[in-house]
Structures are given as structure tokens and as C-alpha cells.
Image (cartoon, rainbow over all chains, first blue to last red; front, side, top):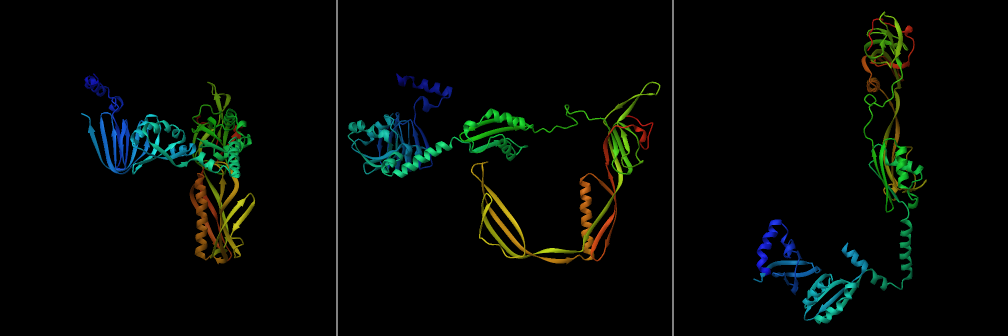
Length: 94
Length: 415
């Protein structure tokens, strides 16, 4: 039912120009060069290693590769990653 | 700022390990526990979290089978606990807090903005006379009273806002920047009736009368004190008889050709300073009237010229302390007798005359002719003669009967 109404909802959101990350709770990624990354609206942490971080974004997964990765800030709404980020990869459910 | 807040409340660095460490992190996020500096190292996770959040970790650890170890404790509460046996430190700390509490009850700075006509120093001196000064108690400050006193004391201040911010008294001032033009201003008082009299003896070159009755014409001679424009205008009836006199403030542009006597004498033997090159700079610190010089002692040399640079110390923006610092630069010189040769003496005499003429021109006097001679003797140089000038040498005098006026012109028109 939810999937049925999704195109209508998207069309309505586009029409009234509301940011989609607010309506659909889509993840908002902000890069600061290749050393820092801020992620808002993430779902949960799947795996966290020094060279690899996998996050669930609700609609899919986000994989971050690099070295010396660490989270300078970690809360329910957002997390801030620092380190040498070499690659990011989106993995969709569908 | 965030780090400062965390340090004030205290935080711990912990190490978490277990099979389900990621779940541990997700549960922390779900329970609104904020983690900082989360690092993974060989299956162990180390992170910082505040003390109150640390107490919420026990059920999470039980659920996820993770073990938590405290690596270190940081922040003010832990610092106090570690130093709990140092009584003097705590005494000093609480004394500091008490002192701060006590000192925060005073005004330590008076900040004035918006003043352009009246200087900050003038306003501060005025406020001091009214009992508002640096170091006064905050309870004694009445903002409304200060504002009304400034408005009453300074006529050009049209708006004052006064407020106390912390230990600072902030005064915002708006001044009336528009200067009143006496000719255009409607509320200027009416000038008293008067006549215009000559200040000096001379010939009238130009005369433009705006108000009053001219008693002389251009080209006439006048003496000092002669009435040139009368402030009494005769009002006549149809028969040509004077009915009465109307008194007005006489106003006219009158240019008089006069002569100014010039005399200047100076000695041809003078003493000039010749600096020996001995230069010394000493620094000082002054408390009230007592001055401490570095290095001590007086510089050598019979004749010295001194240049002093002094700065005052301020506790706040406008709170001046009686402490001064600066430097004294001393240059030694000797006096050498110099004799002006003929050319030099004449050049100096001309220079002095030019200076005198420049001064006259600044006052609005036009110099039409110079009849000045330079006489040189062995000892002196004398410059004397007359300068023919054109100037507005008139003065206002109270209205008097016009009988004594020179060059009386019966046909002159009123303006």
C-alpha cells in the first residue's frame, strides 16, 4: 500500500518543493574534502572497522572505504566520520 | 565550545568489546547516548561519553554481551576528586569565585557610542561630576536618571539610551548634527537695531548696503568711528516730512582702503643648535607621581632636548588607571653663534614679511601694495613700512542721531 502511493507522494513533494530528505527521511551526506563526511538520517550501523564502514540508510546500504576511519560524533540523528575516505558505495535493496 | 562543556561536566573514555559491538552502538544511538571519538582498533571500540550517559550503558551491555572498561576520566569533577586533599587549592578556587561574585556587583566599564560632537572624555567627566564613575556599585546606577542628566547637560544630545550589561554601562547617544544657520534659522532672535561705523581711517572702495540708510558713498574718505550706514530709516509722509524714524540692524559690505604699519626687528647674531649625535632612549614606568626610569641616571651633555612618549594603562575600555609607561628620548646639542650675512638677513626679513601677509590674508584682508624697506645695521635687521590693504573694517554701534555723519547723502535710497 505504501509503495502504491509512493509515486503520488513524490510528485506532491516535487510540486510543493519540500526537501525530499525531510519527507522520505532520505540520508543527507555532506563531504568536507575526502577527510570528513557528515551523514544525517542514517538508519543503523551495520559494520564498523578502521578501514570500512557499512551503514543502513533505510532504503539501502552505504559502504565507505578508507583508512584511519573514526567517528568524531555519533548520535541518533547524525554521525560524523573522519579519516582518509577513498571510496563510497551505494547498495540498493531493490 | 562543545569540548569545554564536556570538560565542565566530565566525561570518560571507555573501551567496548564483544561479539555484537555494532548493535551496542545502535542501541546507544537509540537511547540518545552521544558518543565522541569512536575508534575501532583490533575488534575493540574506544569512545568518549559523558558521565550521565555512562550510567545508562549497563542494560545495553547486558543485551549485547559487550564488556565495557573505563580507560580514563576527564573533566572538572574528576579533577576536583583527584585533588580533594589539596585544601589550599580549593580555598583559592572558592575565594576566586567569591571575588568574582563580589566584583560583578560593580560597573567596570562605561561604553559610549554615537557621540561625535561631544568627546567620550567630556561625557565621562560630566558623568563623574554627576556621581557616575568606574567602580561604582551597580545598584546605584539609575539608567533613566543618567539619560535625563546627559540630555539636560548637553543641548546637542537629542536622544540617550542607557543600560547595564553585565559589569558594563552602555550609553547610546544621538546628537543633532545639523548646524543651525543664523540666516536661515527661523527661530533665531532678531538682531538689535544698530549702525555701522568705520573701525579705521581710510577710503571707501566698495559699498553694498543690504539694510539701513547709507550715509556715505564709495570713494569717500572716512575717519575712525564715522557712521557709514545708519540703522535709523526716516519714514516720510506725502508732504516729504519725516514722521518718525524706524530703527533697523544695519547690514552692508563695505570695503575700506587703509594702511597698516609694519615693523620687524631681529638680531643678526643668533645662536643655533647643533646636535652632537649623542642620543639616549630611556624607558619609564610611572605610578601616580613616582617615575621609575630604565636605565637610571642622567644622560651627559650641557644642552639637551627631550622627547617624551607617554601611554596610560586602562583596565577596561574607558577605565583609566594611574599607571603610565613610555620612553624619554634625549638628544644633546651645543649652541653655535651664527651671524646672518646680508643676503641671509634679507631673506629672513622677507620670509617674516610673507608670514605676516599670509596671516592678514587668512583674516580676509586683501593686500594691494607693499611699501616696506629693509635696513641692515651691524647688529640688527629692521624691516619697516606700510602695507596698503583692502578690508572690511566696520563695526556695529548702537543707533545714534545721524547729524555727525560724514559724506551725508540726502538722496541715498533705502534698501
